Image (cartoon, rainbow, N blue to C red):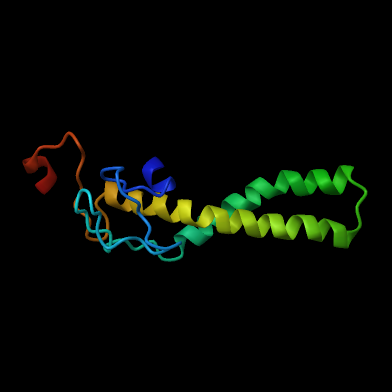
Length: 123
């Protein structure tokens, strides 16, 4: 999952996983793994929103409790920061989810491990 978080091919860690911001490459130019089997769908967005909420909650609580700012000033701090966090976490979340699907052999990926023999991979 760490390779996917970093936007690298989860199988070989040599090539980039994404062609554009959220579009994965068709296949890895280094190891040949086909990445079109993934079905991340909306799950990366849910993960991004979940993490953003948990990271922002202490900040929002601290700002409301300690800073004597007006509501518009608070919104000018909180909303842009939340949007930046959400968008910034979206690609790493999608990469981790694609890596997780590949690792467990979900949605058309073949379950494989670096130390598996061919007979173990076929089961």
